[in-house]
Image (cartoon, rainbow, N blue to C red; front, side, top):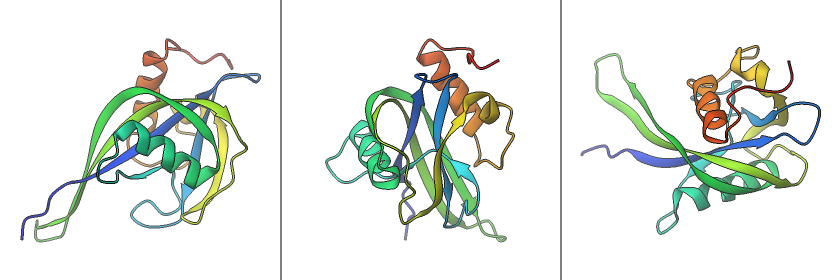
Length: 151
């Protein structure tokens, strides 16, 4: 039986309204990234765009409302067993989102949800899922914010 990649969307949500640029992250409750910080996201439903899925998953996982602005990158997450057979393959569509409203509250599949200084994420000062700093850097460039303003 062939294993098809599963499509998911990530919401890379930025907020610069305070003393510095922040990004919204969730601390994952479930494997494969349990305990790691990453962008909120989840499966794209049939008939749903990646942009719409990112906004929906963001609201479900954190209570935050944001406007999806565009695609940042596609990320393949492939894991194999010891004998080389495919365990899973996700294709993640990273979406740049602009914060609109709400306070972060962790949903059922997250241990925590919070705004984190972009500089702390870029320098990996906390345990992060794969490619989070690189994806954030691409989001900042796409948003015209190549550098953070917190230092």
